[in-house]
Length: 404
Image 1 (cartoon, rainbow, N blue to C red):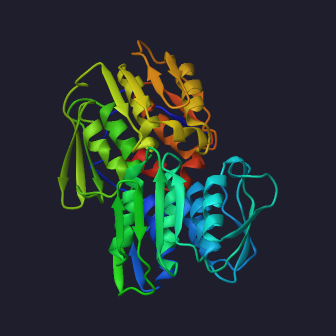
Image 2: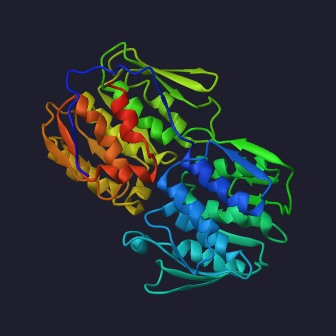
């Protein structure tokens, strides 16, 4: 589905948007719920990723296909490894079969997991024979995808002696690790994160527990961009959010102050107000703790005609697509002067935006949503726009609702 968008000379009219639960929190909690059935969840993400994960957890088939759901691939690799007596072949889309998973598999094998590659060494599909994992210590590089480490953390309480993980070198996306640990704490699991060592105590059972999932901050980023590209005085409320968030992407509230957007917290709602033009003509950020909002920020800066230098982006190359290359391609098409490296993006201040460009999404939900707010500046077409369902099923309804 290609979607033509033209909101030039339009203002946001909607007063509020309700956003589904965090995909990151939901997927972690869905795994924990399998270990602790008396855990009840509310406001679970309605994203395709969470639906794929939930379906996979309920499946009794040998072949488990999770499509494009990268988080599900990592978490399920660990989950099925620790599921005694269960044998599965875990696979996904063509892109998923070209996303590396060797680092996680190697770590699980050290713990005693029985995992083999069905086709290409280091990549899905995986044949996993679930068994009791007896080893309680493992080392893994801290600068790999945090999902590898979180996958280990989520199965850790089920191991007889718990688990001690040594993180080697620099730690990437630390907030996502802290999110996992906080959710483990919420269900009663004891954890310690001391410098480069994480220790998880074993936990067979928990008390009856209900957790309400906070709405997704990554999803909020597109509305921050929309407000930033609107006129001064534009106001939009988003729910349900809290000031003390587990999500690294909650840094949006601080980042977008530089782009003229003020955030006010009230109970479970945030109110975004465009209060000024950007405070500077150049934005420099290290997004190592929040790489998923890099696309949104780059597009916002381009739309505001200011420069930006974004670093800490090395994980973007192994997402649904190589996001750095995709941003380079599409922003250049729109008239940007941009350069990218393997871990950074450098955008010069623009003087014009080419109109009526058609933006391919590369099977990447964040490409579609990040570029959508540019429709306030020029008419634009988003190709394969339905890819947004991967993380934000109602995105286009909510986006167009803003101009109702």
